[in-house]
Amino acid sequence: MKRQQLILGLTMTVLTVLAQTDTIPMTKIVPQRLPDLNIPRFCHDTFYANGELTVTGGHTSNFVPTPTAEFLKDGKWQVLQMAYTHDDGLCVPLRNGKVLLAGGYEKNLGVGQTIEAELYDPATHTFEGFGCLDRRRTQVSGIELPSGQVVAAGNWYHPDAIETYDGGMYFETARDVSLPRSRPYLFRTSDGDVMVISGCWDNYGKPITSNIVDRLNGEPFRVPLLDAWKPYLLGHTPRSDDSFIGDDEKGDCAYLLPVQDSTGQVAIAEVRDTVFSLLPTTVPVPMKSRFGEISYYTAVIVDRQLQRGYIIGCDTLCRKYILCIEYARQPAPLTLYYTDPLTDADGCTPVLSPEGHLVTAGGIIHGGTWFTPSAAVWLFPVGNPIATTEAKGSPIWPWILLVSLVVLLLLAYLIIYKRRLQTPEDTTPEVTSSEPAPDSPRDEQLMLRIVRLMEEQRLYLDSDLKLADVATALGVHQNEVSHCVNYDKVHTFSRFVNGYRIEYAKQLILRKPGIKMTQVAIESGFSNETTFFRTFKTIVGMTPSEWASQKTTYNL
Image (cartoon, rainbow, N blue to C red; front, side, top):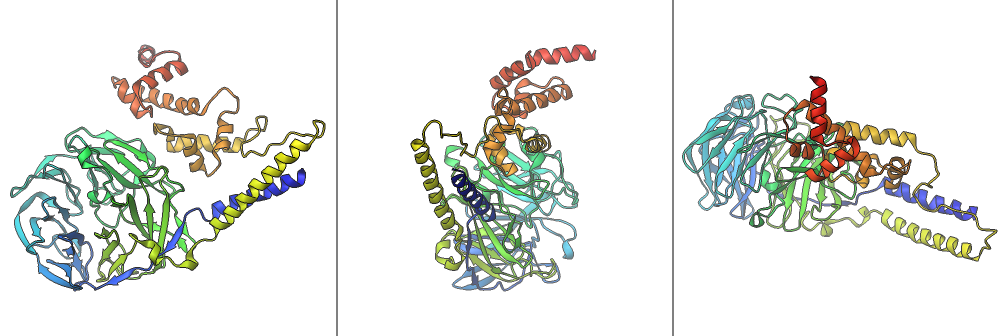
């Protein structure tokens, strides 16, 4: 019996090591080099208009803004003259087929801001200047509402505000913002509002620590998730419609947002209206491959037809990585595509082709600066990656894992079979489950890690928090977490988490006299007010209002 236990233990060890050494499928893809641009450029905009791959504006060599655009037709790039220069300005492809362009750096070397606005008509390949922004802007984001109204926010070395465009000659300021931002994310909500979400920097390049979200119509509000997970720094201004995973016909507004914690770990947040939560994934977002560290630098580009999202990263050798997120499945499977090193495609904005592939045009030459833009154009065949997968690149560990599982099942069968043949006198109790025995000692070190995780990252503020989420964050089996939390057979995981929520609620009530209990419930991580009231009274022995009155009386 001991020999069988030893074999079983070794098998489990092998399985654990295998799972930890290669937890995400990696597939090599071979990108296709498309014809080079006529003009090297960076801080430009790339999009498909009228089925044509098009680039507009940006700056060329020596950091000089270029008033030109190009579109790819019959294998050649055709150069167009724009009305103005737009180097790191506003770009919004409109529902009517035209493209709105505005703002950008005023001079060479990224100095100043411009105010001019124009429309590009891909049907005639013409640009028409028509008016101006309400204030000078660069590093500005924009989004179009179903009504046709365009909302813009963000700036660089100039005051920020939210402004709108309704199809006339001018934009007009709609309201001030509580926090100025550069390259913000703009997400629509189902009630016709627009949220302005911070990136990493304010309008003067200072790090943003606030988790406040501004709105076009509603009041600013705080997002608890953004305490621990910040939207990470992008190499370009995000075009939020590229990250949309909702359904306009059903009035469902939802987006994917890349976020990063204080350790540098990247995750994907799902934003549905004003609700922010981490998207559950089968494994954490990989931060390294067998080649080295991965640095991601794009927003999520969504293929709604295949229900996939993509973010691009690179390593120090400029090997490109494309993380595929199958966001419609729960938890979302992740696949990591990679290429050989590409030295002429750094920092450029990817777009999704009509065939479902990712395309980048321009960017920076690897090892260079904003003064050395690239003219390279690459197509990454993620829409049909199987055809480009190298057979020798396919990982062997799934087959080893499958064989190990078969061996494990056979061993388990032999153990059970032998126990049935034993007499009662020969039978000794065994524990073959991965869950700790009921009388096993509590893992105090793990408990300290659980408490530190809850206190530092405030996971309890997520109303959908599950035991498995804590286990995943700690990299342990969920049974180990359950054993620690439920050690005294009195507390449960739910009561453990709710204890933190109630303490957080108490602090909210004390810090914000007069706050509505509904708001306290939601901000403290409860899914609804009823559960909050019931839990508060169970733990504290009185209702929130009674407790608040008592505290007020004592303070007086």
